[in-house]
Amino acid sequence: MLASANPHKLRELRSALPGWDLSLLDRDDFPPEIGASYLENARVKARFGRRHAPEGALVIGEDSGIEAVALEGGPGVASARWAADGVTQLLDALAGATDRGARYVCVLVAVAPDGREVTASGTLEGSVADGPPRGSGGFGYDPIFVPAGEGRTVAELGDAWKSGHSHRARAAAALAEELRRAGLGAA
Ligand code: IMP
Image 1 (cartoon, rainbow, N blue to C red):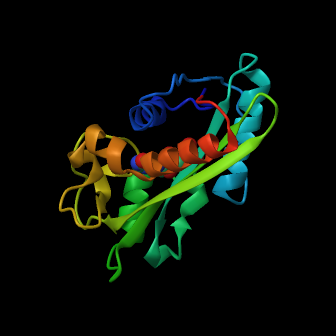
Image 2: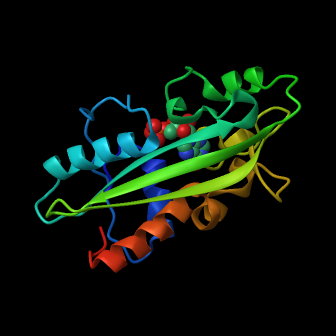
């Protein structure tokens, strides 16, 4: 189970992990995301989810964000809460910046029914587009994030591209490998 209320994240993780029976543990009382790191936030969500999930279910907590070089890694772990309209805020913050480099980061924590925890992370390098948002796929900063080696934004590249290449897809593949090594089943 995925301890998240974000259906985009579920869709991306499902297509990145086709063999898994993943569903959303969607609650309205998730603890606030106030940790100092992605790992801390992902762990809090995973442990909260494990307490409320059906017995026997492996629960995944996820935290992610975008890190801009010109903002010294910001907004980073605060990506979801630093502005009402993060896209406009980021474009404004980078106006005139010479370095538009950025990356997406995703950290996943899986908690097994017996309490064992496995973690994994993934990144996607790229840059923040110097222009208006483009494309309709994905969510969040995708209409202004251009992956390295691509000319289009993630929102233009679309959900199928994302499920194979995103920071979330990479973290999911790494998590699946770590779970396999730990002898734990799929979520
Ligand atoms: P959280 O992981 O729910 O705390 O939120 C992470 C925030 O980072 C999201 O609300 C987005 O603003 C941003 N973010 C994380 N992953 C992505 C992504 O795949 N595309 C676009 N924005 C993302």
